[in-house]
Image (cartoon, rainbow, N blue to C red; front, side, top):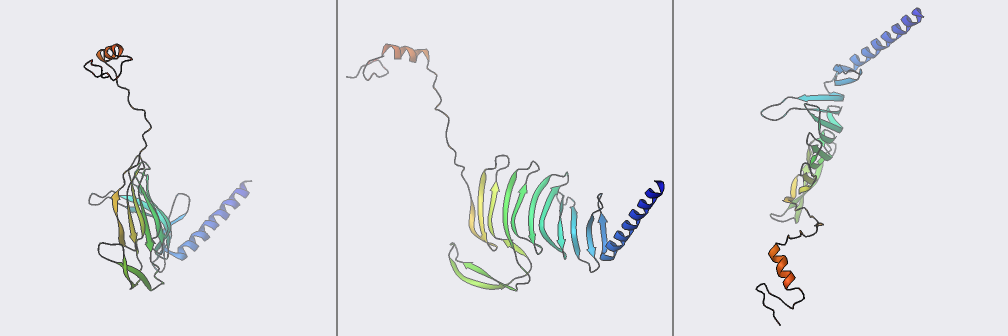
Length: 227
């Protein structure tokens, strides 16, 4: 039995050595987490690759945070999650070819959604893109312009702002490839009154007056009866 344990330990050691050698051959540098997963790897050609955890310290009054997600050939790809430095989820972002693409959501440390953004990432493999030119003070499209598409992302779609704690939509803005089409205006929440009118407490004088004039026609407060 002891011999078998030694053999298993030797096999495991050799597997770890071969695995470590293989990883070292692929990457210039990398880290291992507690589960043995490869993190923050940089390829021999200097590109970020695979799962990364990025730590950003507090600077100039801006709070620090950590973000985790996937790099593909030095570009952010897919879902990235943001956490404050105490570990609370404060954002979920989506990336394509290194730029924000699709819906991005941001939260308070208590988990309340406060902002929802829509972005579009440009494909660097498509050298040109067509953007609309709007008239001044109107939403009318005057013409379309062909521009060179570089690798970046722009606001595209609706930006929604919510009141923390209640989830009430406070403001909505709309963008078309970086251009503000519909300026945000405060949204007035529509409420439905379901409570019954508050009952007015009657004074002894009011009760006495009603008792005296019960059954009379068109009685006014000074006691006169109008025929």
